[in-house]
Image (cartoon, rainbow, N blue to C red; front, side, top):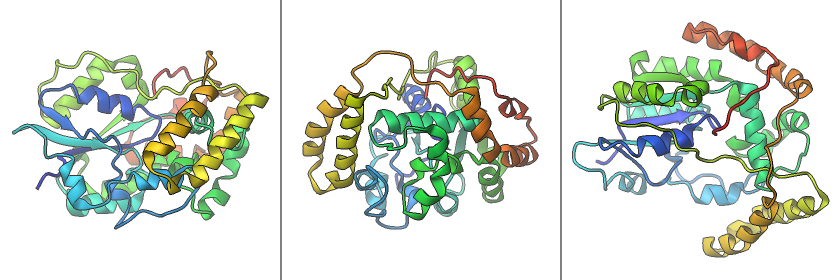
Length: 311
């Protein structure tokens, strides 16, 4: 069997893509070339429909076990195999599936201030032309309606950030020494020591990784009339694109996306008013997270600006 020895299981927009890219450079590690295969998110085929663009994403899931194992066939002898799907922490059923198939796996979790994580998530989908709601606070308020309509995990801006509940469940399935809990700011502010911690946790030689690549950084997209029209076309493509071959989707979507992201500038930052409006969603769970982990996350309860530069 070619199954992974470790997984990066969370969370979206908290440096998991950068972590995947960094660990891929270690000679004793092999990470699947497919980032986010999403194997553990379903028993059998994933859903066929969802929110804007979800149908295409579901088509990309590596859900057959033979296909999943094939992702690791090229691993050199003796190398530890791994993959990164940041939705595994959020999806409690996925946690259960991991426990059944990989009970000895080592699990890496990156946590980010849940308000900033949610805003980065919304910005990502806005820049991709898929998010129809131009107001971040209102997009968070729409979550229950979107969940009921079957929109995929990446649209769950609030739910993805309820780490206390997620980790509480994870700790019932795995010994705590199988789980390495990191903060996003660790990867941002002290990348080399953080990568050394990860290597020591995985049991491979530290000191060989000297940088975290800048990966998956969301571009700037202004809210203009032209961009509004481009987003409308992209959302239409998101609804019907799954009916066409991937090469056709890429050929059509590429120029539209480049047009949408043509401008240069800083990404939209969350305002103090927006932060104050969204923070109440997370206050109770932050207390739960502190109780579950024994660590303080009091800094997440402030209205200070986030200065993260990698996603």
